[in-house]
Length: 110
Length: 176
Image 1 (cartoon, each protein chain N blue to C red):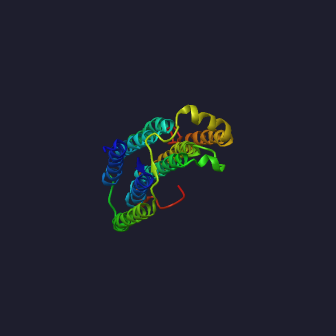
Image 2 (image 1 turned 120 degrees about the horizontal axis):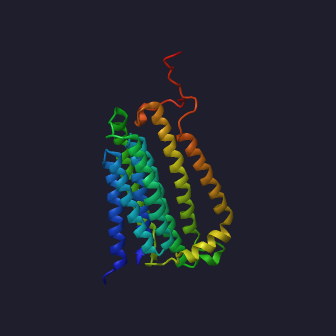
Image 3 (image 1 turned 90 degrees about the vertical axis):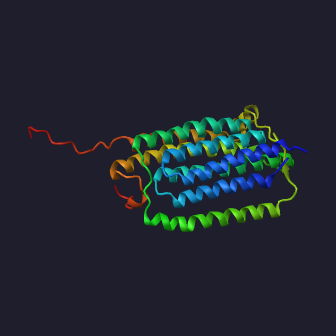
């Protein structure tokens, strides 16, 4: 038995690392990977809460049982779509700017 | 008593945190991408510990497989080199690392202080595809179908964005 809070602390640490990477990294691809790290941290807390909810019999209270895992599935699907579009945007930015450093990408127009 | 669940949780958690910190410490994007793959694999282990087998499999296949291959492919396509340090990034380090430490300490303190005796048993969730599938196709049928449209739009958007612009300047021919 592992306390639920351990899972939440691990999830919070991963999310905080993602936020830090988002702040300190200058490479646009690494910044994008930090966003994926944040999504992973949130997914872990979804699954941990789903397990906890299932253990305490939460499905008796009108919530669809096990929906936490389905939400994780949807987060992954949205992350996949986001990665496809985001990396295409990165390729388009690199084609016009010839750089991946976000400090040099400071205009919205091409 | 030897608590195997706790030991496995700590082992996977240590791998995940080490990978996340390594993602921050590396300067080359390809090293960051590989450490992110390690984080995702360790998280798949955590899901498996909780009993969410379907989620663990999708985590490995979709996240560590498809999405990270896309990342590595883009890094290699763009020939991304070592990150340049700029003045702005030093300011960000100054605020980012204390912010991260403060935030994680605060979250850990609140969670450990205010959590009761709730504990999660190993394999607590019935998370096999046989239990997730009916959920996806009954209760969550509309969101599931909408995500397929979302994926379709994302594919078309990616193709449009990443393709060469049609009005690219054509170099003048010698005869003109």
